[in-house]
Image (cartoon, rainbow, N blue to C red):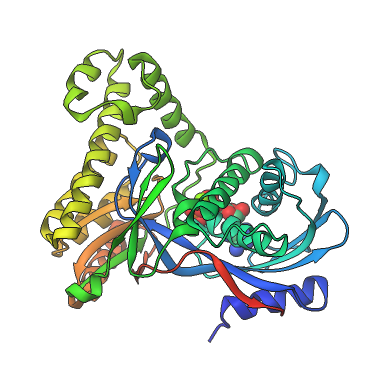
Length: 394
Ligand code: ADP
Ligand code: MG
């Protein structure tokens, strides 16, 4: 059996740097139940934190130098003075770590140098937010080791999430919204997290599917996705331009009852489709939360399917693998299914009765084989805890 990532982080630390870390911190990946491409439009989203986590073994250094090593990445440690961290420096995966040091320093905190060793069970590049898991594990470590005391309150955690988002946007150069980091920082066991990205407020919504005989199946299509490419940025740009045309700060300010009028004022069909997705998706999040609270799982499933259609047809961020996973899951009796994450690959989710999950998984695998796609990988996800300290000392 492969060893747990906590142990691997410890081993990685001693191999890369020698000795033991001051402690080990971890943060989860996330999967979004509904509310896609809404975060950067000031909208609503409803992620859960995953059981899969990224672990950071960290030791403070007396100088202002950062050394970083990950057992998921080839090559020796990446070394950089804190003063040299800026957009594109360091390049590659180390930007997600160094960016957190930079962002907390920019926020006015006294940030020390450190040795950081990373190991993870979050699939990388699958749309389950391994990037935020990495940032938030490092952010949690820094909060404790530099005495920032941001982990104790939800306000402090929100501030850490914001620093992690800046790391990803400004240093790693990925223009993502804030959902991933908020989910990883504020996730709660047995709960989904209702995020209002207009003001970064959050509300925990009980989400214990097992208690209702249900399960959330996450299907990694293993189709490649890359958020750093132009598609994501293009969607953001179209939304911002549409908001400007409509005279609002963000598309969140377009009220659903005003949607038809707003669409009539947009210059082209592409912008109309994008805005229609965002405005209707925000409504679907509210309806989904109502359905979950009422235990109306059939209604929740229908909203997931509607979300997928909107992402596929209006937002145009799906792909053949995602569509096949969703259609097959629905055909196999799932209550609902949709792509999740930024799109163009990554994962789909299906809401299924617990005793049916294995069958749905098998049907999707069969459909992928028939279509000549890479074999997908699936697991049942439960809502787990957010970032925190796992161990003091090595
Ligand atoms: P996702 O967040 O959906 O997994 P991203 O493209 O946003 O995909 O982030 C993936 C990138 O984050 C990786 O290419 C790598 O640079 C960095 N990363 C994530 N997890 C790790 C890890 N365990 N070790 C090193 N780098 C990681
Ligand atoms: Mg990511």
